[in-house]
Length: 445
Image: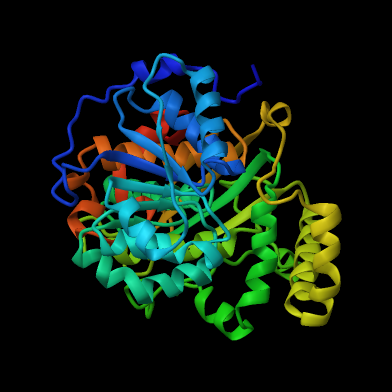
């Protein structure tokens, strides 16, 4: 049998899945609870394995895609992995409106890993928003989400569809970190959280071909003006950011090199590749929670960095990342470089790190939340015992559990009644489920 990342089918029995959702948002008579679209792809297979080994054994689910033979191959692998549970059904479907409408009407929730989402995501999201079906994906394409909010947020809310994009490594660790820090500042100090800062403290993880390709395709398919508008830190927020604080600043020495020192986070903070993406999502969560009984705070700002050992390392990384972005932004150099990168640097879409290389992967984040007085602080950690793509399987599966078997009516997503939301709107239930599934979220005393 092939080596698998998830080798603990018995773990599903260890978790308490006894709570029954009072699900008024989708029809109780639907054939499935969950359909996974894209199960033959690299990330999709990981999600299928995690669902098979960690979600309840009585889950009614299916995997869907265009190729029935390949889908059956995934089912065969899942059977080897966990032979004692009911295996998923196979549903064939093209990404066409009529077929997607038929597919999503069969289920309460769709998880899709079919990307790039700027090419393949809209028909699936639109079908879910139109038919009262909940939706999760693992995109990191903020310009696409910006467009989807404009087109489908009101429709999803009208039909009580909980639509949560960016429910993978982009942007669950950041979104949950910001949520937990704001919650703890409010709880401990009875004060608004004015600032949350997170760093990728240390990690070992590979890169997926699909993700690397997406970064290039964003430049090819969106104008620089649209990228700038949609990637503004508060572009996705339903609340205007008229009174928020600015980014954190450090001493003159660090500012000269474009770096930052945050004592609570250790090391030197430099630019993080996914910071722009994560900051947009966390600020949408901020805006969504501002109308709740548990707002983050009127001046809230989230910033994300990566820890490096010293100023030289931090500046070198920042410079390299800046030059790469510049070359990709200029069409002639992008057209020259992109084919070489696709051929020699990144794996093909559908491929990624080998199972053997992922065994020791991990991601470790540290964060600090600062109250409005600038002095009262809370620190927290998010420790992920997997690399990026296995972590995405965890975050998607945990979100599915909350929506399908949790008390969704007690979450902010339930209170809002649907719409294009964020991982953080699943609240404390999601934090607890992530902890149960091995993604440890903890607040320091």
